[in-house]
Image 1 (spheres, rainbow, N blue to C red):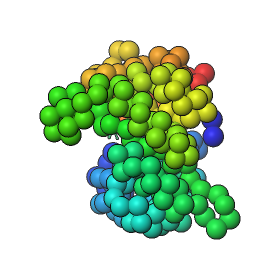
Image 2: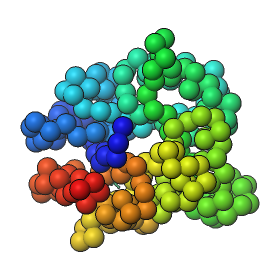
Image 3: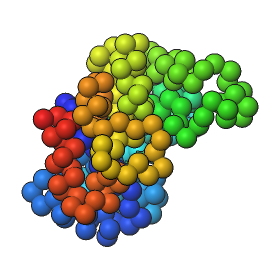
Image 4: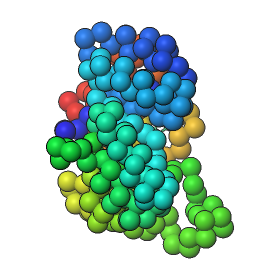
Length: 232
Ligand code: C5P
């Protein structure tokens, strides 16, 4: 899969999601389904969006004992999603088990990427709550390295970390980056942001864009603008 814009469909219901996707008519953007929508509507929402011809990043961030994650990943794999994810903090053993579970009998599987440290975790929480005493960037790069050694396909990271992740883990290791805003847009609650054009420059493979598209007056135009800046 090449570079692409993934729309974060952070809607509370299937009805609102379909109403949003209907606006795209013939176009089939890559879609991210997160916990809110998945827990509200269940696996059927994945089947419905897939049946409409969209690629799907199922963002459920699994983190449990290896055997449980392996079995859960086998279920997600049967849903025919394109990308799914887990927390690298679950250890390399958990990541390897996840890959096993995800691999279908014919040897194919969705891409598997890891969350390193959530961007909502700051250095203070890292040190005083998680008792991790290294600088955040070192922790992120170490976790990305663990994911790489466990044979995962990439990580979710800030676009500010994308170039360094590629240096450490190789150009083929995918960087999937949220925290994208238009230069003239509202940042909302995202703090460390980049424009789609800047994300392209630093080598992000996929940008995940939510509100700049979902809350735009003309979501299709906003999506086209993302594509033009990031790919065109
Ligand atoms: O609306 P916005 O563009 O901020 O949406 C970004 C999406 O990426 C949301 O679904 C958010 O949960 C997700 N995300 C993030 N930062 C992370 C991981 C995921 O913003 N570190």
